Length: 315
Image 1 (cartoon, helix red, strand yellow):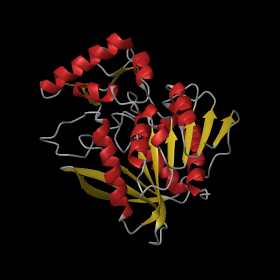
Image 2 (cartoon, one colour; image 1 turned 180 degrees about the vertical axis):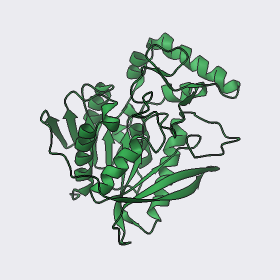
Image 3 (cartoon, helix red, strand yellow; image 1 turned 90 degrees about the horizontal axis):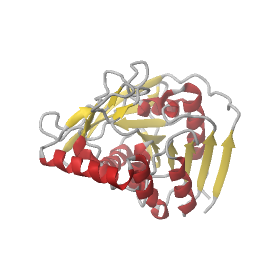
């Protein structure tokens, strides 16, 4: 494994202002669901195929949140970008009859693979230069959707949530806590789903993330497009999904941007140590998980790193 550790204390030079951007809606089908996506292009695009980045966001998110933030950053650096809502979230799926707001890792992995396939056929896209960028929870999904996938050139992960069984127990209350949540999930599944708010103020009860911050503040992630919903039927699939164990099977050139001040950095360290493919690992000092989503300075630094990685020549 080739691992370049780039610990950054100083502020990197900010990129120039975001380029003017044009977008168009792209709908595609996967496993019976209609998914809604957005293709981002430079306003001055002349129609020639561009290297492209498929961007996916954190759990419970929709494409207008951190995926759009990073898609715009990629366009400013000369790429096309593609975001989409996973099935059952935002604008995707049968809004009347499909299970909604379920954090289903296997379904989301499949949706990312389908996104790569549809993007490869778009006339604005260079099919030999399609990259994946996963943020937070979808970092694991992106790893699994890209491994062994001939459509994917390179992968970048920002603030990745790469959990294994040990981290799951640490985060969710030990073996008893995990067992209790799985039982709750099974009961919700049997009842056809149980929907609760995803975000709420600090200390709120009956909420997935009672911590305020990004998902709760309208000036940040609590935008009108955000579902702000969580299906308790998600728990078993989420708590038994261990992307931190999947490094040995990953076969794409990889860049990771994270911080010791962000979520579960130990997952990144373990994953990086087990990688068999080339990787660049950049640690930014004092950056919180939520700041990776929308703080301009931190988003710029992360976007610079992954864009440079996508542009690098393969050896």
